[in-house]
Amino acid sequence: MIVSSSLKSRPLLLLVAGAKGTVASTLAVSIAALRHNADEVLPSLTTGNKFAYLAPVETTCMAGWDTSPKTLTGSIQCQGVVPENQCHLLAPDLDRIPVRGAPSSSLGFRQQVERVMADIRAFKEETPDALPVFINLLPAGPGTDLEHCRSLNEMYNTVKPDIIPDLAYCLAAILSEIPVVNFTPNSIEIPAVINEAVKRGVPVAGRDGKTGQTYLKVVLASALKARNFIVDGWYSLNILGNEDGKNLMDPEKAAGKVANKTKLLDEILGYPVGQRYGAPTHKVHIDYYPPRGDAKEAWDVIDFRGMFDLPMSIRLNLQGRDSILAAPLVLDLGRWLAALQMAGRSGLSPELGFYFKNPVGENPPLTFQDQLAQLRELERECDKKLGSEASG
Figure 1: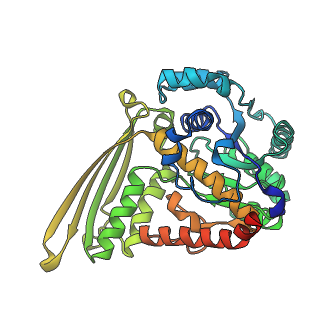
Figure 2 (figure 1 turned 135 degrees about the vertical axis):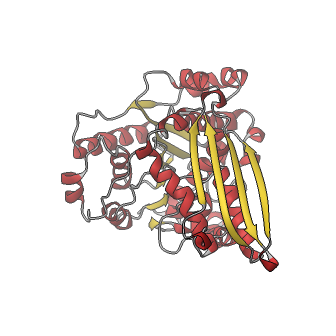
């Protein structure tokens, strides 16, 4: 476990798997922009004025891994998320971000873990004063059941790295005593991994970042529940044209994300939507629509009932930008995990449910009100343990 007093004024180092993807590359631009004009980024963060015992957010660094042969700046330009003039201005800073190739798919799982750990040591040597946090931004993959894995040896003998490449990065980070953020819908928080995290004093947060449509779904569902309205049905459609949308056209890869988007509604409301019809009436669809690019669009049709069982309805149309919504949350989560490790927390962090569609851990907060309350309580816990030390 890292001793909190050794962490003062250390910049954050985000180690990102999938570093050239749309969210990660937008994150890279955000980090570079913080050094030039922090006012372009800071207002979009939820942690910008929190954690006085961490180094200023403007000092954040980034490194990572990707399979793409393009440069990071080349990837950013191809994705078209960030205005070209912004990318050109920040190119010197972006070109200095080290991105290594992903471990070869021909390696076994143990060898992949060892390779990633070697990369982590190299990244830490390049930025020796930094506090590293691992961020999983790899694409959604097919579901896997590894709940039976209770030890590292079981994992080394069972895991097929070509099926769930995230796991090698996650385990390598934990074995290197680095906190983990799982922003993907992939189930990497298996018992053997979390046991190691607890043993090594490493906090873990996930799963499946909650950025746009699902964020608003939690807000609206919580509001409807607070008024005792009965939700009769909820139809959700997403269209997006980035690589994430393209990847999710594979039903096996989309299954986890759709399930995460779907189940949270019943959990918030406390009953299955559609129970009066004897079948679920909460429908979630994701469609790849290339003209949209990263500027996704989401429609929601919400049918609910009030007094005298009279029907009412809400229509919601969100025109958002996938990576612009996601990147600030990733930076926020990096800061949260750094603070939690400094405060001596380890294992799963369900209190960070505000940021995730499917928060892992025991009794995560479900309604929007409870999620905000638990964030405030978690911040107070960190401040109580570290605030007095930072001011001493």
